[in-house]
Image (cartoon, rainbow, N blue to C red; front, top):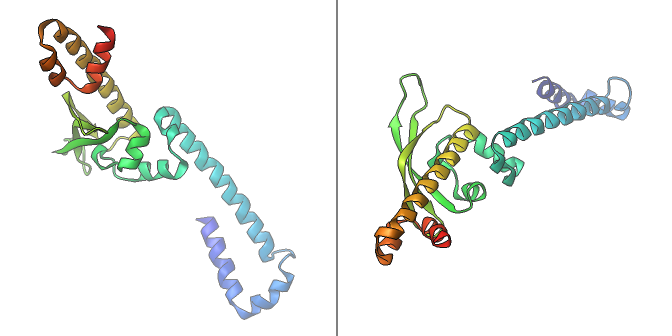
Length: 194
């Protein structure tokens, strides 16, 4: 707020004709050059603090290291709905995922304004849709990195469970039925094990 007020005061002063004559003495005590130098130093300090905050967010969710500062800021400032993440950002965070299929489940009793969102499935880059065994309810009041971390854990648990079922299915199912019954990632993994 102080930076903005100082900047506005300087611009109004420069616009004034009296101040224009004084610009010749801008480098003197109380001149515009000194004010600009102080503003620049304050802005550099703000930039370092901002970078520290983004680094902390990246420590909480390491996949954010694949995003630039502007992309990360857009994700943090944007909607907190997993289904609303742009495909470009989502591809950088989860390279094999095209989008998440979600539905609004209403507001939590403790929530006053933000609805909760249920993640039902994800669509892979090949177009294959993988439905979660247990849908994840994302609390949109949580920070983005917290529910994305929870989503990542849910995806890992789901793929682990599917791989186990696919492995069991190799003994009881015909190959054609087995391939059609499970997602491609589970089939490829299980095929490597068997």
